[in-house]
Image (cartoon, rainbow, N blue to C red; front, side, top):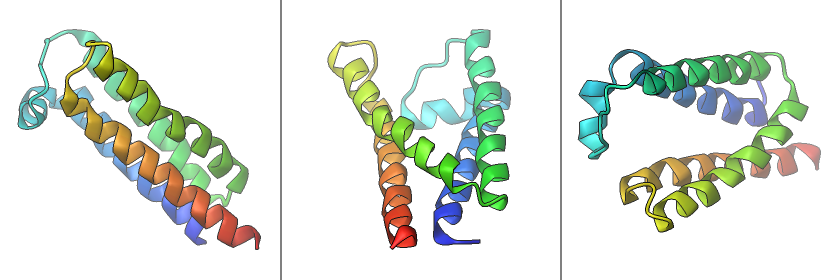
Length: 119
């Protein structure tokens, strides 16, 4: 597995863990990050969507789909911008910042590996 696909695999594992947390045990984990637990099913549904997304990441990493890696950088670079918008508009607390930072840094890592791989 090349380093591009390794970055996709690691992000897929991150998404898998986040999805499992939101689907099965948000009431135990979210308070650690000072995030509210609303007890509404959309949080669990979001966990399922993340699990589905993680499947694409993990499978693509093992199949050497480097074009998929390129596409993921587009959305992962958007994540910090969306999180910043949510925070500055008062729709989200500053605790959400870590999610945007992690997504953005993961996208930078993948882009860096893509540039090294192509040269």
